Image (cartoon, rainbow, N blue to C red; front, side, top):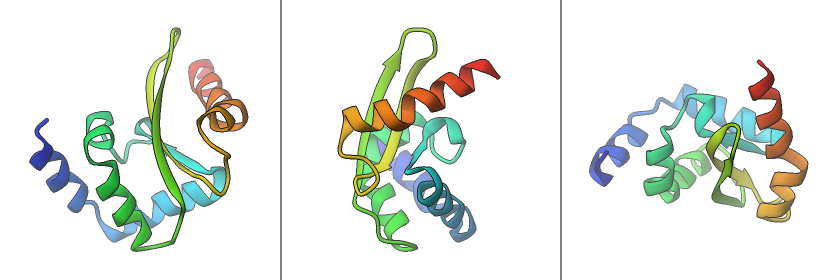
Length: 105
């Protein structure tokens, strides 16, 4: 997917969907590519545009990362830095449990 295609796709996400994303971030502190709102490639290439779109609905101190799990694969994640103290804290207190739960389904 080209950068311009990623930006186009992100800009086409409705306000209602963006509010759903905000609700997820408020509830658990992060949103992943596996939540179905953003493709992994779009998150990697255009995370700053995603931050901007999210902040149109609610202000978060956001960051982006991805992490590879040998038994699950790579997970791209946008997370609230006010909920987690960085990448390692996100893994320890949020993403590891999320991936474990998804893998058990």
